[in-house]
Amino acid sequence: MTFDYQSLLIAAVFVSQIFVISFYAPASWQRYHSLLFKRYPKKEYPRLHPLPLEELERKFAVFRPMHLVIGALAIVAFVGAATWSDSAQGFAGLMQMCLFVQLLPLYIALPLAIRLRTSLKAMPPPSARSTELRRWRVTDFVPPLWVALAVAAQVLGLACALAIYLYRPGTMGILISFINSGAMLVALTAPLLGFGCTPREDPYMSRADTFQARQRFFRGLYVLSAALSTWSTFTLLSNAGLIQFSPTFQFVGFSLIAQLLAIGAVAKQNSDLNTRDFSVYRAEDGAPAAP
Image (cartoon, rainbow, N blue to C red; front, side, top):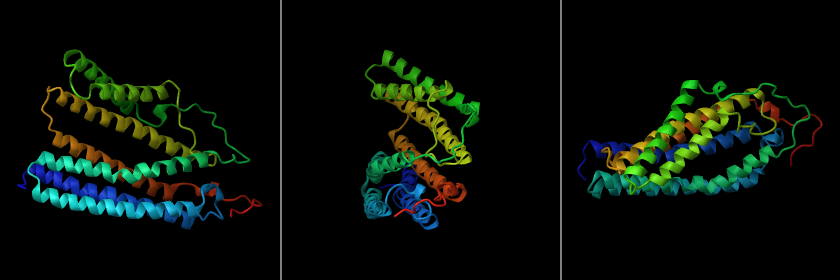
């Protein structure tokens, strides 16, 4: 394969994708849970671990080799594409296919994450609970400018999808773009009207940690929605032939978004482990110890 600037860009993003998605993020995730159980054992912090440790270790024993095998296959695919691929677009397309496969363990782990969160929320509330008397607003967590830009991006995406549907109805991706922009617009405006404020992740979370969790949630919601809507709008305009936007750069952009999300999730976990108040999960005096 002849390497030009596009191919070199794809190669760099491909290598970083393999490292971040298949090695860095999974290893950080395993390390987080290992340190969590080591620093805060279930016997002393029963409210922090609603599921048995043995069950989680069995799941981790499956995910660890799965990530390694998929990462090794992605490396083989990269070497083969760098050697025999005849175009930058084909190189980028293979990178996109590898990304979908690399995310497979995440889909498999999703039921476990949902079960863990549900178990945390289902725990009996503490005997003394704090009451939030203040009515929180979205702008307490996210600057108004970010909110305005995110909503404007969704409105622009809807208007673009509607205009292309009216004037170029055969364009690929119109319905998907329209549904995504409409659903995200509802998700962004509902909190502004007082609906859907995120509750505590569990009944024992401290007020300070609850505020930070909500802040992270709303920042992610409004910032990422604006970025994804912009990317989706450019893709739709390219499909309609109104702008020249190579699929190669679409694949590169999607890979970079996935990598940034993975790095952000790792940073969130590290921050959570170092700054969160875990004392609220300690067993009360006289309470029965966890098995």
